[in-house]
Image 1 (cartoon, rainbow, N blue to C red):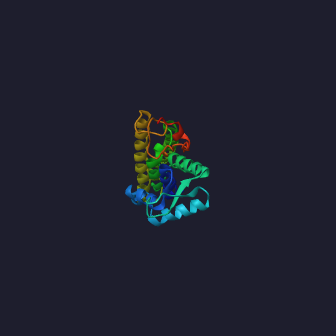
Image 2 (cartoon, helix red, strand yellow):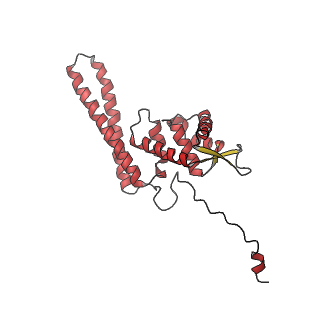
Image 3 (tube, rainbow, N blue to C red):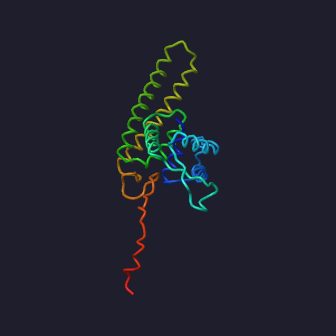
Amino acid sequence: MSATRLLVLGVVRMHGKAHGYQVRRDLLTWSADKWANVQPGSIYHALKKMTAEQLLEQVDTEQGAGPDRVAYQLTADGETEFRRLLGQALADPDPNGHERSAAIVLMPALPRDRVIGLLKQQLVKLEADERTAELLTEEGKDTEEPEHVRELFRLWQVHAGASVRWLRDLISRLEAGEYRMADDAGQSFGKPPTRRPTTTPDRDASRHQPL
């Protein structure tokens, strides 16, 4: 899974509609090029590719909205794909950390209980990784493999242990009500803006105004 794909969908969704420059500006402002390896060229490539896949659709943008004339918004399939990618990134351990980082940024876009449930799935897998690394480290003492190879298992164990502790803490804070999520009152980060219904002016209203 591409962290860029998830982040681009998330930014467009957050704004309701957004042009390429706006998506690029937001992601670089968040330093996503450093923690998710998101490159400017890959942002525009993702926009075009997901438009071809009918996950995004092009819409008109207001004059002066930015350097780009074309804006994008999520289709129904795009909303489904966003939720699928976000759920997958929250539930599965991520070896390189890019997808996990993107998921943490966008997790307020989902309801609290949903996020907690997905993170608990990831926790079970990370705890299993920690136990496996610990077992390999211990077994390595009785094997004929070079001693220094066990450092790889120790490194794996340390990383898994740190992730387990961090994830347990995050889950506890979410359960205690920390952070505003999609089902909380008010506007949460990553939640689409509320669209006001379009009203048609009453052309005959002036006839009923008092003189």
